[in-house]
Image (cartoon, rainbow, N blue to C red; front, side, top):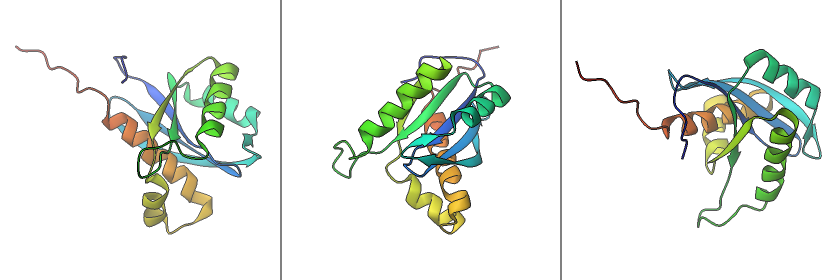
Length: 143
C-alpha cells in the first residue's frame, strides 16, 4: 500500500498496445480527471509527449493500471504493462505504482459510450480513482 503522506498530484495510465489513456488526480480531493489519449505504436507512446505531460502536471508518482483475470491470475498483457511501468520510471525517475484495473474498461465504456477518443482517458481516470480511494484516510487532530 501507499506509504506516503501529504498532498500530491499523480498521473494515471491505462496502457494499451495502440492507445494509452492518461488522467490526472490529486490526493487531497481524491479526484481524478481524464486528460487525453496518447497514440501508441506496439505499446510505445510518444515519449516526448509523456515528458510534456509530466512537466506540465509535475506528479509525485505515476499510477499504472494492471489487470488480472477473474480468478486473480496475471493477465496476458501484465508483463507488457510492467515493462511500460519500468520505462516510465527509468525515463522520468518517478515512483510507479500499480492498481488492479480489472473492470475499468467496461466501466469507462458505460460512461462514455465506447468513444475511442475518450475511452482510454476515462479508464485512466477510473484507475486513478481506485488508487486514490485505497489511500489511508488522513487522521484528524483532536482539539
